[in-house]
Length: 331
Image 1 (spheres, one colour):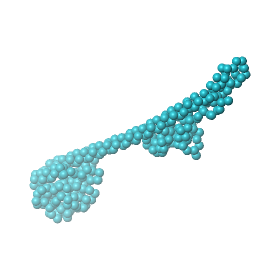
Image 2 (tube, rainbow, N blue to C red; image 1 turned 90 degrees about the vertical axis):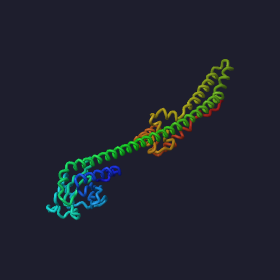
Image 3 (cartoon, helix red, strand yellow; image 1 turned 90 degrees about the horizontal axis):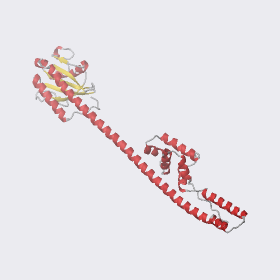
Image 4 (cartoon, rainbow, N blue to C red; image 1 turned 120 degrees about the horizontal axis):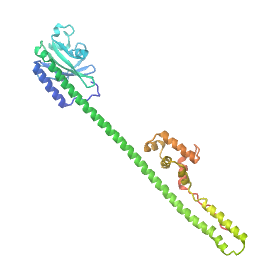
């Protein structure tokens, strides 16, 4: 039995105890056993409760060719020894120490064919009653193997449930990290929107002030000119130039940048501005690091950045700076 097989629980062992007690009673033998084998370690798992049996649970043997059970494994089936004293191979086996010259045994196997051990009966005499009960002993062997199959199925189901719980936990962790990343991204986006709104408001105020100082005075002067077309043309040109200067700086550099990026690049850009590493971004978005590196390179190219320039610092500078209209003094 290998270590990946489930242990035998107390209730199953108690059932096996009833089995060997019944076998010993039906066959009239001093010893009915279920043996468990692990590598070369062959030990008594369950022994009948009769007081005259020399075998007790936990007694261990080193599996070798002189043990009856070794012959069971060798034959991969039934072994019957009616009188070991008459058979050269068995006349000096270890059980002869207790004069156990009679033996019938069968292999017990797990559902995958791996050997668990044996079920057997032993006697100090040729036991005709036990010989007639061989089919019955085989049926008891099937009962024990049925218990092993049930134990293995239960263990496999528990393992599958544990693996399922681990898979669910891992997916929940992924969802949690993604949710946190999205919340952080939303927070960053709200900050960007607030910055843009604040900058827009500031720009609007500057536009109003500059129109008042750079456009309206010339319009007022035009109202008082009667026929000086050259002076009118000069004022109109000045008004036109000032309006061009005012409107040329209305757009945010960051807004222009966002227009050139894909949705995926925009999401990654926000996480970069939050200080996340490539590995952290990949984990948060459920993508490979190579994919994140690909998008980072695209963002750099669209911004015209060299490898030496810091992408995060550049993005932060874009988010905090709006091109303000130039200060042009009126004539």
